[in-house]
Amino acid sequence: MMHLISNKLVEFVEKNSDVIIKEWLNRVSDNEVSTFTKENIDFVKKKAEYILKHLNQWVSYDTSKQEIGEKYAEEGREFFNRGVPICEVFRTTVLLRRILWLFVVNESGFDSAFQLHQMRELNDRVILFFDRAHYYLTRGYMEEMNKKMKELWKLTDDDTEKILFQHSFYNK
Image 1 (tube, rainbow, N blue to C red):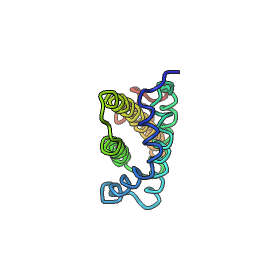
Image 2 (cartoon, rainbow, N blue to C red):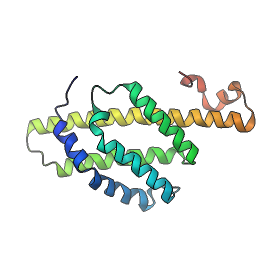
Image 3 (tube, rainbow, N blue to C red):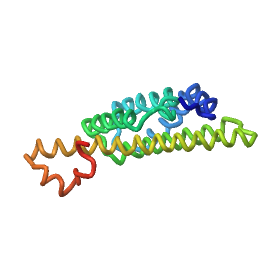
Image 4 (cartoon, rainbow, N blue to C red):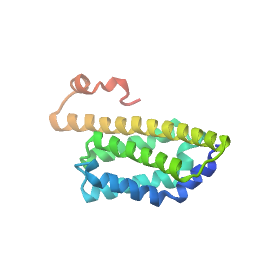
C-alpha cells in the first residue's frame, strides 16, 4: 500500500466537497450544459459528490484501472440511457476537475516547497483518475450506443464497426 504525500490535501477536498460542489453546480446550471434537466443535474450532482467524498479511493495508488473501468463504464451506460450527450458528460467532469483544482490552489494556503510538491502529486493523481474515468465513461457510453443501434435497426457487428470502430475496445 503506497501512501500519497498529498493525503492532507485529499482530506481537505473531501471535507470541503460541499463548497466545491456548490461552485460546480453554479457553473453547470449557468448554461454550461444546455440539455441537463433538473433530474439530470441531480443525477450528476450525486456522481460528483461521490467522487469528491471518496477522492482518496480514486486517486490512491492502490486503486486499479480495472476498478475505475468497471465503475465508469457502467456510468457511461447510465448516461447514454438517460439521453445525456457524451460531450456534456465530458464537459461536466472536466469542469468538476477544474473547480476542484482551483479550490485547492486558492484555498489550501500552501507556503512551502513541500506543500507545492504535495499539490503537484495531487494534481497528477487527479488528472490520471479523470483521464481514466473519461476513457471508461466514453467506452461504456459507446458500448451502450452500439447495443441500441443493433437493437433498433437490426444492425450487425460489421455494420456498427463502420461507425463506432467497435474492435478498438468493445467486449474486451
